[in-house]
Image 1 (cartoon, rainbow, N blue to C red):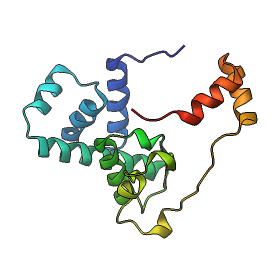
Image 2: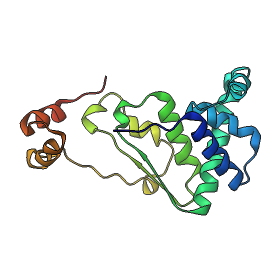
Image 3: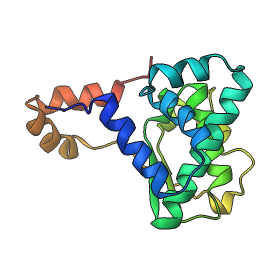
Image 4: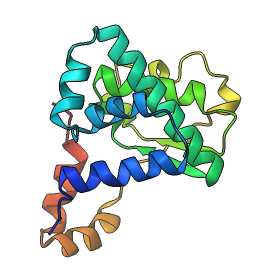
Length: 171
C-alpha cells in the first residue's frame, strides 16, 4: 500500500532543501502551491497575485530548485504517458527542456505514437529544440509474452491484460 506523507512534513522537507541550496525565500511559496502543500498564509499570498505573476513565480521557483539540485548531483526527470498530458504539463516540460540543457539533467519523456495522431504532443513539447539534443527512440508495444509476467504479478489473466493494454486510449 502507498503511504502518503502529510503536507506539513513534505513542506518541511522542501523548506530544508530550499535552505540547503540558499534559494530565495519569496519563491518557495510558489513551489508549495504547485505541490498543494502550502500553508494558509502562503496560499492566500499566491491567490492574491495575478495569473501571469504566479506562472512566472512557479517557473522561477522550479528553475532555481532544479538548477540547485542538478549542480549538486545529476538529475533524471521522467514524464510518462505524455499522450494523456494537459497543456500545463506540456508547458512545464517545454520550460524544463529549454532551461536545463546546460545542466546534468536527463529528461525522459514517453508517449504512444498511435495516440498522438492529430495531437503531436512530443513535437509541441520539444518544439524549438535541435533534433540532435532530443534523440527519439521508437518502441513497439509489449508482446503477449512480455505482458504475461506483469499480469501474474498483478493477479490478472495475461490475455485480458494484453488486450487491455493494446487498446487503452487516453480520456
